[in-house]
Image (cartoon, rainbow, N blue to C red; front, side, top):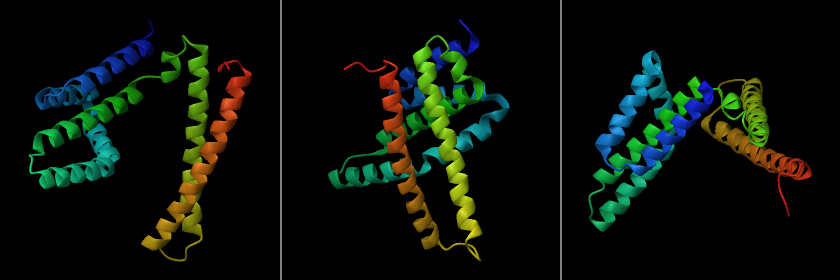
Length: 184
C-alpha cells in the first residue's frame, strides 16, 4: 500500500471516529492530535479551519441557542460538541489535503481517478472564474466598490456558478454514461 493510500485510510478512519465520538473531551483530544500532527503548520491550519467554518457555525450555533432558550434547555454541551466536531473534521480534512496526493491514493480505481479528475478540473475552472470576477469588479470601479456593489457582483457570480455547475454536471453525466459508468 502506498503512502497516500495509507493516509487516505487513516483520514477515513479519523472521519469515522470523529462522527462516532460525542464526548467533548475526546473531540478536543482529537483536535489536539491533528494540530500536533500538523507540526509547525498547526496555527495556520487552525486559522484556516476556523475561517472556513465561521459563517456556518455561527448561524447554526445562534439558531440552536435561540431554540434552546425558547424551549428553556441548556444549549452549551450540544454547542461545544457541534463546534468541536466541525472544527476537528475541517482541520483533519485540511491536514489530509496538505499531506496526501488524492490522485495517488485513488490510483487503484480507474473510475475514481476519472471522477476525481473531472471534479478537480471543475474546481480549477471555478477558482479561475472567481479570480476573473474579482478582477472584473475591481477594473470596472473607479473607487473601492460599496457593500451593495459587492453584493450585486457576488449574486451575479453565484448565478453564473450555479448555471455553469448544472451544465458541467449534465455534460459529465453524459460522458460517464457513454463510457458505461451508469447502467439503465
